[in-house]
Structures are given as C-alpha cells and as structure tokens.
Length: 146
Length: 249
Length: 68
Image 1 (cartoon, rainbow over the protein chains, first blue to last red):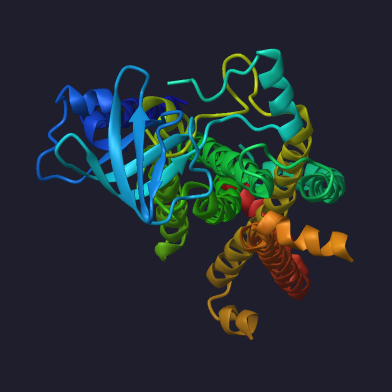
Image 2: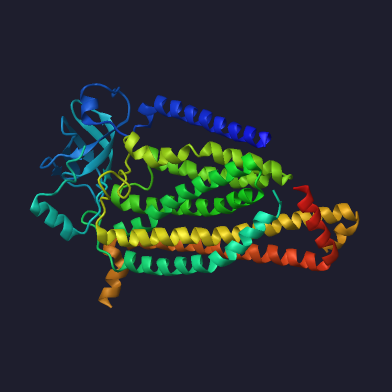
C-alpha cells in the first residue's frame, strides 16, 4: 500500500513538473509561436520588420481589392489600422473582401509586399440560405470579429 | 490483486458490449455517411468542401480522446501495476494514431482548396503533428525492449509526459494567432454550426467512438491472450526445461 | 445521371472531398481487419497450447494466482 501511494505521488509530482515546464516553455515562446502579426503590431513597430520575412494577418478591407492584371492590391485591417498589400499570383478560393487572410512577405515602403496569400476562415458553418436570412434580419455577427 | 481476475472480468463484459458497440458503429457510420454526403447543405463560404469537416473534426476529437484515455490507463498501470490497464493503453494507441493520421491528412485536403496551402506550421497544426509522433513513440517504446515490462514502463511514462500536449492542441487556437480557425462546436455561447450540419458531425463522432470501443475490445483481447501465452510458455519452460522445443513446433 | 455527376464533382472540389473520405475508410478498415486477425491468431495459439497440456495449464493458472 505504501509503495502504491509512493508511486501515485511520484506520478502526480512528475506530471506537475512536466506541466510547469511546458507552461514555462510555451509562455516563453509565446511570441515565436505567433503565426502572424496584425497591422497594428507592424505599423506601431512592435515587431522587427526590416530584412525579415513576416506574416501579416487580418481581414481584407471592404472595397479595397483592386486588380491590375496579375497584380492585386488590397488592404488588411484589424479594425484599428489598415495596411496596404501588394501581391502577384493565385489567390485562394476563400479570398474575399471582409474575410480573414494571412499574407507572407516583406515590408516595403509603406506597402506590404506579399509573396503568398492564405485565406483564413471563421468558425461559422451554415447553409447559404441561413447566412442570407441572418444578414437580412440584422443578426449577422461573423466576419467583424477580431 | 488476483492477476487474472480482472482480465477475466474484462472478457466477460467485453463479450456483452462488443455486439452492441459494433451495431452502434455500423448504424451511426451509415447514417453519418448519408447525412454528411447527401442530406446536409453546402456551406455559405466553403461550398461542398465543408463535408470534409464531418471526417476531420470527429477524428481530431478522437485523436485527443484516445490520447487522454491512453494516459489514464498508463497512469493506472504505473501506480497500481494493473496489468489490464497496461494492455488497454497498448490497445488504444493504434486507434488514436489512426484517427490523428486521418485528421492530419483530411485537414491537409481541406486546407489546400480553402486556405490555399496543404500545410502551415501554425500552433494548431504543429501540436497535432506532435500528437501523432507521441503515438508512434509510445508504440515503438512499448515494443522496443526484450523485457516487455521495462518497455511498458518507459511507454507509460512517455504517455504521461505527452499528455501536456492535449490541452495545448485544444486551446492553441485561442492562445496564439493561427491560420486554423477557433473552435466551432465546444465554445462559449453555443456552437457556431448550423443544426443541419451538426447532425452528420454528431453521428460521425458517435460512429468513431463506437469504433474505438470495438477495436479496443479486440486489441485488448489479443493482448490478454498474448500475455497468457507468454506466462504459460515461461511457466512450462521453467517446469520442464526441454518442453520449449515441443511448444514452438 | 446529371445528379450523380454533380454529386461526384462536389462543386468542383471532388478531388479533395473524395480522397478525404476514401482515406478515412481505408485507414479504419485496415486497422479493424488487423485487430481481428491479431485476436484470432493469439486466441487460437492460446487454445492450442492449453489443449496440448491441459493438466499443466490448471497448475500454472493456480501458480499465477498465488504469485499476484
């Protein structure tokens, strides 16, 4: 019985130690595990952007998408700030105004030069009719989040 | 604790549970397939690719559930030296690995058309991949040693250490910016999935859970038989030095 | 017929949806079959050994009971 108890305490202690270690590592890595930065973080120079590939994420601003041949310009916004983006290439299916997007590239002179654009979708799933009726009745709450 | 009493009881209960679990698995899988492929609507944004969700999301749940179950069995094996718990942990590992693999591949097949990429190293996807490797590591360790007990002990410890990854997977989408979207079903303020899409999701989740019960019983039975075989062979070798040749022949 | 074609096309994403379902079914079936075969093999082996030496089997199981 005492040996069993000792093993039980040993396992609990081990789990606590591993859990604490993991929590410390994860909080230390918090910045590095971040997959993308918001326009605000980049514009307020909270992240080192020079000479470094970074990812910029946010919503594609309504009415900001302009296509010039193969080139696309749009703005990525997080509600507080919007950052102009330039991209040349194939856009994913879900790329739409008002939808989430993550772009990877470099910061140019006031413009983010993206070499890759990924669409980020939200957590809402519904048939088209439901989405339409939600929009009509004014209960729509997707897309503006974040 | 009687060494064979619990496996015997397990076998008795298993014989009763197994046909029911099998019936639930087959029926809910058939109904789940019907609803997920035919009798559910396309998504307003993602169109027909939303049907991948009915495989992907329940598989992800099962990947995390099986790992948690495996860790609990491992803890019971370590603390109380419960032989049946060790065997059940071993029996769960391949099921969890299979569901995690399904989750990873279907997620990739979903990410390509919707996000525009097969894979990214964001926190959710990376932690799920780590889960898959934890399963592989557990299975390798459990079979790596000549002395099965030592291998089992090492594997049990790995299972327990790796359990910290489970909450990391669950909340990775809330703790960090990820490409993966936040949780839809288990969240504050109720699920963000339309009822017509919840039906196939729940059916598939039920089918997968029942599948786990079926395979857990089958594999635990195989492990019990294998363990008995080992002890019998060893006992006979001890009892009459030369009988080994006869037994293996 | 047109219905069936549309069903398999999955709105142009059939190339992603069908492999996802196919893989899931394949993996689950393979694991199930492997598990059934493992049970059959181990339980058959156990029976063979037990029937080989019925007297000894009784003695060993008693011994094991005492050990634990």
